[in-house]
Amino acid sequence: MFAINIVAMILGFVYYNDAQGDARNTVPKKWDTLIKIAVQIGCLLGQLVMGRLGDKVGRTTVYAASLMIAIITTVASAFSSSMVKGINVFVVLFIWRVLLGFGIGGDYPLTASIVSEYSDVGNRGKMMAAVFAFQGFGNVLAPIVSLIVTACFMQSINRDVLYLDYVWRIIVGVGCIPGVATLYWRLTMTESERFQRIDDGPPGDARVSTPPSTEHEKLLVTSSQNNAIDDPAGDRVAEGDESADAESQTSQTSQTQPRASADPAMHQRRPKTFAQYFSEWKHLKVLLGTSIAWLSLDIAFYGINLNSSIVIGAIGFAGNLATDQPAHFIMYNCLGNIIINLLGSVPGYWITVFLIERLGRKKIQLLGFLMLTILYLILGFGYHQILDKSAGAFIFLFALAQLFQNFGPNVTTFVIPGEVFPTRFRATAHGISAASGKLGAIIAQGGFLQLTDMGGKDAWINHLLQIFALFMLVGAGATFWIPETKGKSLEEICDENEEYH
Image (cartoon, rainbow, N blue to C red):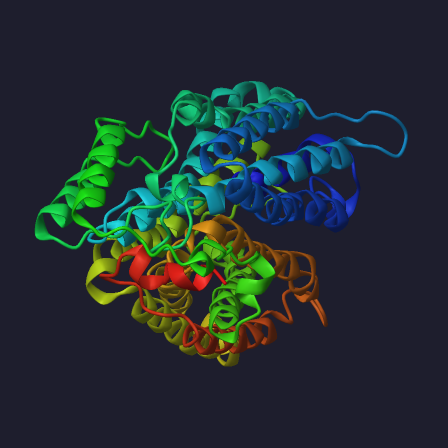
């Protein structure tokens, strides 16, 4: 997923090595956009479909299925080639990458839901943020793997540039290794106790045990929760004595609590449908808040990458497409990508991990959006002046923007939807929120990035940065519709009684 920019660069050498003029060694814009936007389209569909299935069929079943889809389509992508007239390698790669995105898309709502439901109150945000933070390592590992593979083939590439055809396929194929390594644990995971309880009925119903009231019962519940060892990247969730604890807890609770009312009206309460639950403004505004915030973020998150080539050039790692040997050009760009990711992106993820339980989700998201608004305004209105006077200042501002993307809404827009919705609808609502983000990515890559050269090379970038500042302000506004979840159990955040009518 994260290697596509480098892969697109390599494809230019493989398939357009004999083109003339500026077109030589460069993938045409329409094919470049197509293969880059493919995963986003697939993710959007996967987040909606797999999120809904996660609530209906079960988290772990769909979670394993999404990984298997990703593994199969990654391998298939590596073997993409031209088929018949009109269906070239880029069309085939697009198809496989859409399907790859579908599998990856399922990971978003299901990972968030599983980690959220297994974690205790004190470290839930930290665990969810840590899961998402590994995306930062993926961003760094992609150019590292590309650098190593290119270096291994360097002498062969210098003799014949078509050896790069092996290079891009290996880079793509290596992406399935982490998935294969974790598949066993996904296949053997068990559903969380919270998810297993969703069909038991509303609180107070005779079919379910009532919440613990005595200190002894609360201790039993706390002990049971602390025994759940969570590995959000796909590792086995240790079962321990969870089932036994749950049975013991239910048994002791039923002995100490009075039986529920025999009132027939109580037994006739039915769970609300998704549409009924979110037809109420107090619930709908939360879903709108998480969705609009994610949409706004991803428009800028994927759009700001249009400046990465400028930063790579400023630090001296852009190379020269016309004069450099292909292998050297690719390796220099890989090094540049590693550097700019380490400047602000990776640190931002882990600052959030360590501070999310202290500052709270809402405060971090709001801080991030407001800082990004300011930074994009500075970069937008002072774009040419900053570049002309100080490349170092531009690099600093760019790195700072990356820092506040990840120490800010890029992490919290993933975490919050996994907490603010009821268990019955958690994966579906998270999927809708995440799909809104991918819609923003599609708008950025398929729309805004096509405007960069209006009026000349990179002539419109400053205006796009100004537009991104506006979207950051919109994201900040949407954050006020979202409740703070720090220090609250999932049951406190979402009153289970409101799921029934």
